[in-house]
Image (cartoon, rainbow, N blue to C red; front, side, top):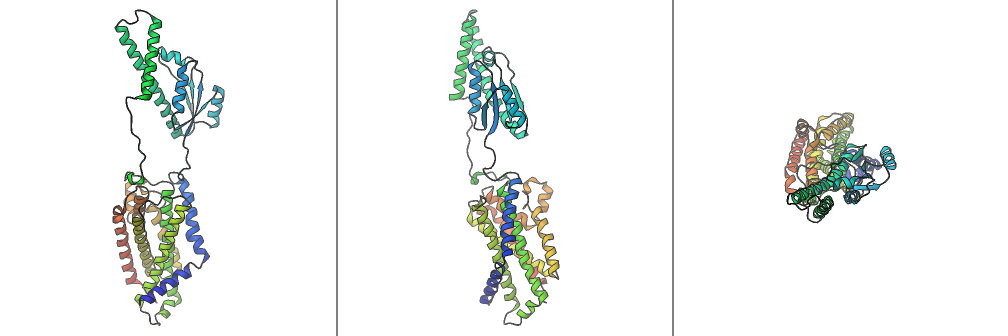
Length: 407
């Protein structure tokens, strides 16, 4: 009996992959969809976004502090600084070649050293997030300089109370400049407040991380097209029933259990092969990161393939004709893919839609893949999703076998 089951499974797999259309629809198309959706799905492919934001500075200051401010901004790794004339900076802003323009006036150093209040000309246009990033960087550099000026002024006020200057304006100005320079040096060598920046690995990412770009589209398109492929394979049972093939096969020394098991085993293995191919090509060609838990990934793939194979069996038992099967496949797969988070992350939709989406196995599969890929969780963390998929598979399979007709 086992030999007969294996023979039927191998026969299904070989006849399926003999068709060129299988590779076009079930491998090439998913990869194209994966690449295209990665560009629009909350983010681009890894590494394709800008690493620095452009800021043009028109420094008209005759003193040292304008140059110092420009250098502070140039040291910021988020900014790409261009020094230019006022006319050229305005033209670059108008053309969209820079996110913002900062004009440092000619008397900037003199006003700072005199303790006067200064208002700089900061001109922006374009995309809001670009402007916010550049503005935050400029404000940070100005806050540092303002802090140094405030510290220097406080020092001068204390010295005046102690009678250090006695009306000598030149001595007071020199004292202020010395205190300002010391405060600036202190900011650089020993800032009063620091923060520790840590680059997180995927194992350290917070559990609430949302999948974006290729890390969303790669598992999403795999989930959708694997369901198309597997349910479409199960519809072969409907075709063979219509053509009388199943009835003729039962004339052979082959019982119904072996016949159905062999067919379903072939469909299941073919589905696993397709999923594995999409994962491998997605990882090595499109640069998708499929996590660092091969055991958990394998477990989830096997459970999901079982769930959708059983769903195909259920559909084959409920429809009467192959035309109904073909129509129902699209009706089943597309809504389940969208509502289950294959097109976009469920984390970004309202809570009621998240709850509704988890009525389908696709949502549980996407939860598991997101946990492994984006949130960096381990095998133990996806056991719930894997268990739910197996439960779906058992229910679908039981109803499908109970209702399936061989004639």
